[in-house]
Image (tube, rainbow, N blue to C red; front, side, top):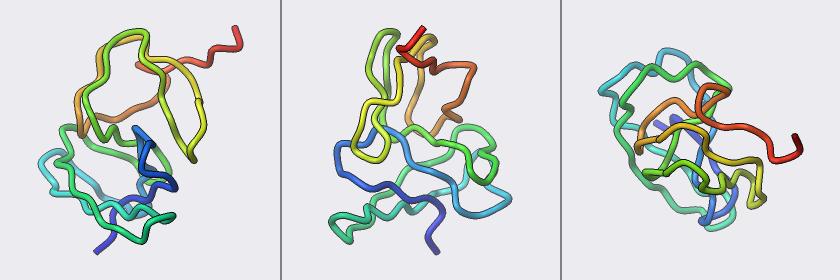
Length: 93
């Protein structure tokens, strides 16, 4: 089962595409551009449509989604964490 998708192998987050992802779930994520599967364990519940971190990220790191810079980390993120407004902010302001 595919739980999350990402477009580019350099993406640091993937989008949850199923409901009911709970902490402890072993996620399978599909890298669309390479037609490759990767795995990460959910450390927190991840709502459908929200981002899951694919690697540990420190404050100030750039977050990549769809192969582009979508913002910066403002609170430490561990692989498998829910990546959202509590730990990522846009660089626009």
